[in-house]
Image (tube, rainbow, N blue to C red; front, side, top):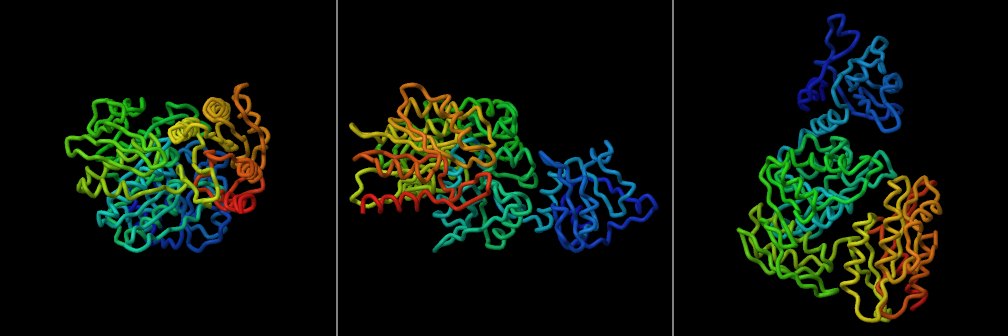
Length: 516
């Protein structure tokens, strides 16, 4: 693709800087680009190098390396030129100076794949917790209604099909990253694949990181959904105000919004939005979509009456927990705004019996007298919701046994909070390791213990596999065992890198060993 076509197709503002330009020569018009790359060490032919300013390194320092490996042009930051971090005098290739290299990167990759986002309808879901569940529910409702859908999120990327959904793989540049919203080089490739497959609706989780890093800048959303906002990712956003502002950015590019006003940040968002918004509530607040007469059926799920100006429905979901009421309510609101008939909404919600890694009950032998659930809960709010749901399932004489840890190289302040929550809501818990990354697991565990109260009944088993063996081997009849933090993840990340680890397989192995 010609550089001039790529730049004009991305619709970014830029300034062309090069030694040849100052001599009155403009090489940009007919310069052929065969590949776009971000790593200066990668050998390419006729490549366009994008110099990103990262948290730890500034890629402008490696432009000479990029040129030696095949770069014929580069995207650079205006600020790097102005403050002297980039000496343009010694560079012969065209430099395309932009205000934000990350925003430019998103537009350039979108243009590279012929802007597939322009031909599909997008629903974006953001919030601290619930994104995966809400996106999957919307995906199921629309797919059952006969619409071809794409799903992008933490638990995977799918294209709906009448027989078996197609799962798309992501190759992140950072193999240790759990990429909820893919980086632009993968995101727009996936969207191109979806466009080719005839996808009409793309339902995607939109994280605060992706918004702050401008990954979805080229995408206009038909509907944006706000689930909630609780403490998380403060290692990146520094404080809750910046975290909230990052989330709010999604709604500046949405035609309509569906907002949980039971959450205080949701109520604030409603006050600040100019675009039309639809409110949802499970707590009796005046809203456009309300869940009334809520009933809990234990392990068999939840039931409520959905009331709105558009419909009156008795909703039954087979997924347990109070949080499921809000998740299904938001999904139903989105489907209604897209014109899906009420009966389709009701039947689709009932048909979905589980969401991978989200309060997912594992299938065990009938000889086993206890239950095991896996869940992605890795924040204080998510852990509290998980334990509150377990209390709803609990019958007299049953114990709630929790296994959990906290991620390394992430905000440390939430660790003690999680220790306090476990102490007050679990009958017994095991503190273990959970993606320690570059930290010592023992240090993370000490931070969790600092919040545990004296009356909390717990033990420490650093190795997660051994922790699971401990609770399986020592389980009592009726125990509700909760494995929190991993959910859909099939790996553990520590200082040695990423290694395979499946909680499902681990539970199955120990159940067979001790119970036949």
